Image (cartoon, rainbow, N blue to C red; front, side):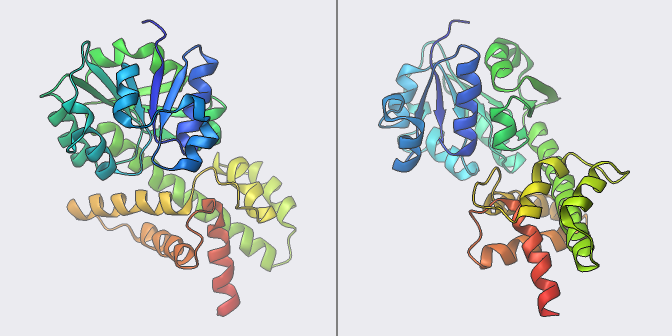
Length: 294
């Protein structure tokens, strides 16, 4: 595969992190975002004025968008990328966490055009992506995975093929469910320990060396202990969006998720206080506030 520029649509935390990894592995990147600030952070000399202009210069595009509605608009809207002739076909790598059935419908629609669609949602924060320490969950045509393997390897040095289109999104939601509950458990344990007189830093160190240890602790623990949430690696509003998809999917299969219900309530309380753009480690404040009002 030649090293043509890789286009990135959506230049937020994840888009910028993927750009870092791609360029580290020899793939130049170009980007597009509707938000001027994101373009400035990415580098104005590396951005285009539209998604269509990006597709004209890149054979492979990475989508880092918020939800399936945005993906649908970019690809299949009135001025969507599928309306532009592509020879060879345009490759799409979708990293967004989406409702699986909606993503399947988008992928099927792309089959009617010269567009090849692959999903690779990510398990890991934007910092983990930028550091090359995330896991890519891949779903879609196995031959396309093979064709795009140099780009996929550059984006995520660890990746797992899950199966047909939609399967990776399902896996991502299941992982996010467990991850969110780990985060809430850590927050609750730190608040509990603090209330009964333990030093939070000492307790965090003890937890990381105990039978209760998890990968959440070194990533979110320091932010919780220092109460620093203004440099987000993963945001409250994004997390709440993902858990909306989880509860919707659980409702379809009639599976109650009692712990998830409590977690969503805590996230929503943060959003209601205007903390949606903060790092989701701020869930510890939602737990702390409940103790202060009881």
